[in-house]
Length: 201
Image (cartoon, rainbow, N blue to C red):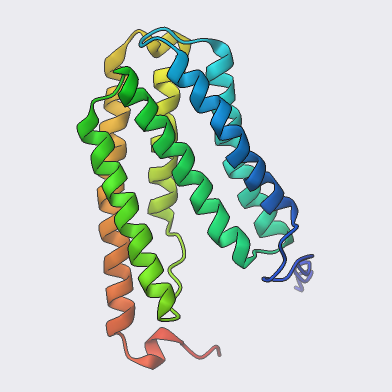
């Protein structure tokens, strides 16, 4: 039984103007008005407009990843997509903490982890080492998005414990995923060269 070959990506790794990168840049620009709407709102009282804006940003996070996998990942995309995610999630958490919806402690823990991993990745990149996102990291990002969404969702906005519970789950996953990323990199560094780059048979 033969399988059809996988379509060749339309864009190479050095491409800049790709559909995925365009979506990412639009997400970054759209983040500003959404965060302003969140900041202007009142704790426990949300509008469907604000929630819909956040939902659009969350969905487009999936969209630009899907486009990148289909049409080719790029170096710019690898830089811009995580940046957009961090700006969006940390911006949402901080604005909700400023308003009083979220406590500062979980927000600071998440922020410290994101800053640490970003610096860790940058130091690894200077040595020519890439650290691709792991599945656990993608799950924690979605739980972070969910925590903010629950605080903005009108039916749950008045029930603070719902969003708080999701936020602390996000904190736990954020810490665990950071440890997992560092541990995986440490194991890869300690492995013999043949284990790091297995020969295909």
